[in-house]
Length: 497
Image (cartoon, rainbow, N blue to C red; front, side):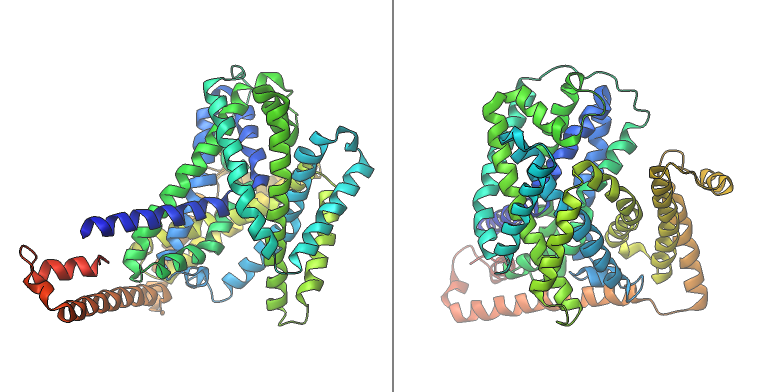
């Protein structure tokens, strides 16, 4: 009986784990691991560490952080402020989704797909036609809430994965060259912040409730047991992501001698694939990426337009919002992938430190004494990250920050290494926690933890009562040789038939 329960738990973890992989994995994200590898060169292992932490480990742990906080992002963010999750959602949906991610899918589809298949389209008119067709199809399909895209995506995603796993295997077994030094001073920071561009921590925080609910529907109703299953499923998703991203990063590292340092991300990926597998592999990847980007765009446009309609209480209808997102996407996509990445830099630089902090706080909430820790840590982390975001913007405009402000920033520990927000977050958390305790204010986080425990106990008691009732109805099963009532109840509570 226990063996059946373990097999069921394993299968459920695999199913939800691959769902996590499918949602995190985006065709538009393929351009970043090879670029990290090419930029880090002989230090690609250090780059892989940064990519693994920011692009894989923290995003999948975001799901556990949400599960550990009641199962929704709203409950996770509640100790910071009641309005925090609303503002965060708006920034992610509009500032990241509509402004960055959706246009990037179109730009990547053109630069990897269309431009590879039709070289003559590599001009303004060719890009304009391709982008208009891309968003025309995406808008038309999204009018029915993307149901067609869901069906097509279920076919395209496995095809793209098969191509990628084949390419990754070739990259490992048949390297295209040897890494050459690039002069990069801080490969870990470069890889860590480049992984911001994937946006997967934001995805994890906002989509975690999908995975938590899926496991509840599979019978893991107790919050504590649900977390165990979330961890198992997250491990499955993380391993699959790591295989793809690590392989692509290694491909970029071994092939960096073939390309100038200023090669664009999309051109680098296409060039590497051509070196590795020739025209056949390049064309296969081009077709798969272009179509996968289209289905991704349809799904994202559906979500953003629905969010706008709901947020405005219907004053902005779904289709009007959808068209507005498409128009914005056309203008952004015409600038190309590199321009979109440049625009995204300051946005992610401002949002990611607080997002990482939310993951850490959600995972360690049991040892956090009160809401003051959440508020103080978030406040100081946000202040420093806004400075870092502003510094990026000023640098992009060929300007400089005030000397006194730069001097103050450099006094912060780890600022020189690019992680100036960490120590202020710790200091803010300690100061906020002490202040909260001295003032004796109410702590939402402790109330949430108590509710979490109450629900866990209630679900376990329900499972025990259900098990007892099932045994009594079975009658004769109590007399089975070698099976005690206690063992039977234990097996039934574990979900065994």
